[in-house]
Amino acid sequence: MCNGESDRKRLHLLIDVARAYYDDGQSQAEISRRIGYSRPTVSRMLQEAKDLGLVTIKISHPLERLERLEEQICAMFQVEKTLVSQHSGPIGPPQLAAEFVASQTPRDGLIAVSNGSSISATVDALPQQHRSNSCVVQMLGSLGRSNPLEDSPEICRRMAAKLGGTYRILPAPLVLDSPATAKYLRKDGQVAAVLELAARADLALVGVGALVANVPGQIFQGWYPADIDRRIAQQGAVGHICAHHLDSAGNHIETPLCKRIIAMDVEKLRTIPQVVAVAWGNEKISALRAALKGGYVNTFVTDEATAIALVQSETGV
Image 1: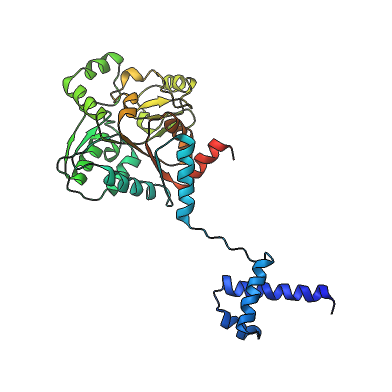
Image 2: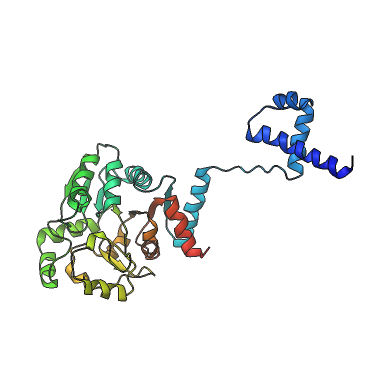
């Protein structure tokens, strides 16, 4: 028998032993009985398989992978904290965000909330607490005709019930018919007081809205004619946060809507100690990059698929 054939049989035997041990979970004693070699010989064969590169051992865990993604996003966008859920969509990120918000809310904390499905799901995931001195405040006007469970007043009420505290409603719609009406309403004592209270929050819980095919996100649909859509797109808007549109660098854009909305000034987001953004989905990548680059967010909560897409969009890999 030539050496080549002998070597080939030896390699096949080493691969058989390695697969039985590492893939099938057989013990060295079981393998030794099956192939007719002693257990010490099987042990030496396993080491030989590693020395020849037939076996490579890689220690890996989903938590380690997620932590690397979190570190990458924090470094790329100068965000204080990123939390990435292994579970996608409305199950994972809201649960992760709820746990974080619960841990960060002071007993007498003031919490400002926006609207949308991600915020609604986060509030649903909050554990019941007993913080009677806490207060939840609405930071932008009501949508009125959308799903009430995802609208700011109802989110405000439900979050206060979860915390065991009180809440303050903003008695105004999100979008007014004219700049003059909006200006008048902003001067209303109750409206002005709630917006000022929101700006003094200890923590803000916000979503990030996307512009898909040059159409603003769900919260704006139906509030204005198509020509405003086009003007917003032409101005370079890629998304919005708290009803304020942002360009790709995260700069606030003065759109035709700015004078018609009732919402906390976007610049005041930067003065709130903890701004938690909860968002996911490929369609939101450009909007998320803008919100993170603009410095409006301290803590970003998303899922693994979105985090990977976000990193790839920034690195070009």
